[in-house]
Amino acid sequence: MKKIQTSCIIDDDDIFIYGTKRIIQEVDFCEEILVFNNGQEALAEFINLTESGKELPSIIFLDLNMPIMNGWEFLEEFTKIENNNKDKVIVYIISSSVDPRDLERVGNYEIIHNYILKPFSAKDLQSILVNISA
Image (cartoon, rainbow, N blue to C red; front, side):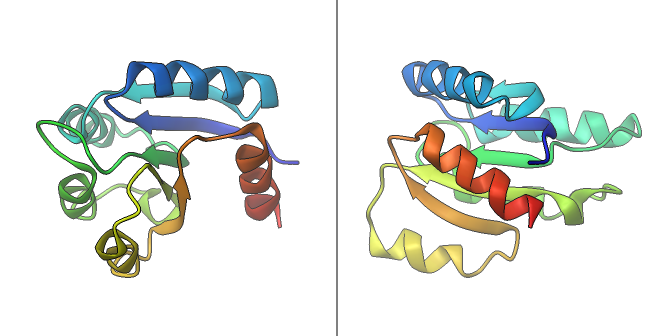
């Protein structure tokens, strides 16, 4: 299976971040993991990467419910970034929300490949690797 260069976790839950990082390392999912506690932090870094001529992470694991800038607000702003690899970025919503409105909104964004309910597992990551390698 193909290993990802850089993945990114955008979530305000430190326990979820810790667990997800361990699973990512256990599965040998990627070379580098970027972590942000809200959409605003991630957006600022992605703009910085773009201005430096660097690529965005290949995979973004995005929570919806966060302070400062939530997942939906992040997606609205992220789609405006002009980067040479943005069309190759894959977003996975990782959320505990079972709100049907959230599930409906997913369809508004081509960049979102799936909506995964927490907790996140090694099986979820392996499935992602299989899907992107196909």
